[in-house]
Length: 149
Image (cartoon, rainbow, N blue to C red; front, side):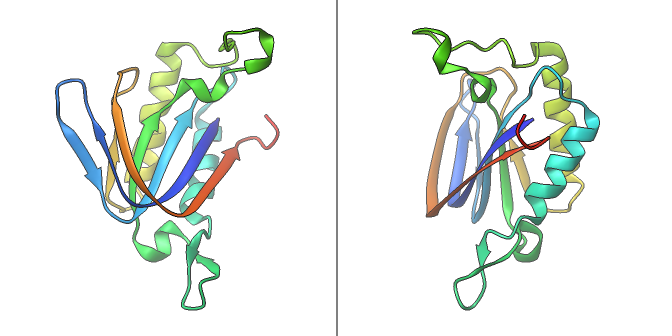
């Protein structure tokens, strides 16, 4: 399971029907589900992201987590994180999970984040969406569980 985590001042997703879901200061998480991923990996990655200290303290050091600062969270499904650009001129997505199990794990991951008590918004799995963000820093972190693939 892979995630690109961006610290944002604001972010939003516009759904295919025009509905807009927005957050304020927090994290924009692009989540990719791999073919070997399961519930254990989802829980582990969720815990890592929510407790990752990437928010500044009073001295501007990375010392606060999303939980510490009561951050908003926006989660977007992103199978293209599993694209292998070295297989030719078109990315190879064969290591991404098939849609049905990926959707189940995406929803499970989102539920886990929601259970944290933070304000959580999510995109629609498999939909073409428009994403807007105002990055803070910028701070962008790549997280993968298990580490190294």
